[in-house]
Image 1: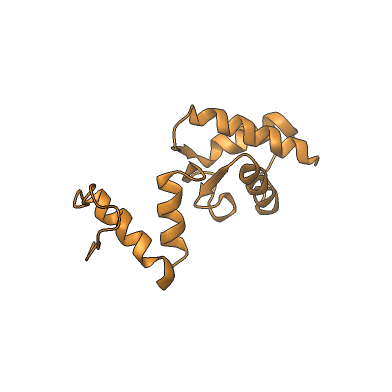
Image 2: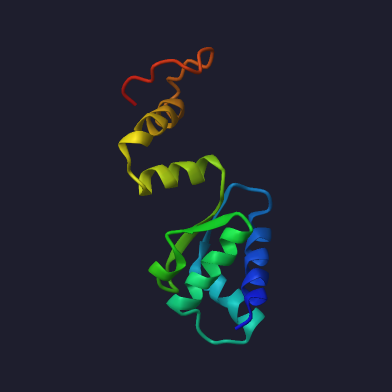
Length: 125
């Protein structure tokens, strides 16, 4: 299947965000878009991985990945670089080196951040 088909599907999904950082969707919505663009019946695991590459090309990720869920499941389509993307990446890729960044995000979400001092010690988040 031509890679431009995957790019077309990625653009359709990007338009579903309507400028938002994320959108919760049914995997069946992606399968329907896949069928409409390609004429193929099934979005297999390999095709889902190829679509993930096309999503990456337009600055999006699917979480959980489309090849890890069934048609009846839901997922979040997330704009890369958004706060939600950062949080998902920090949670999914644990590292002692990124713990301070995760602590800062959690502290901010809990409303305990000293906004006047961006270098403030975050303490326990």
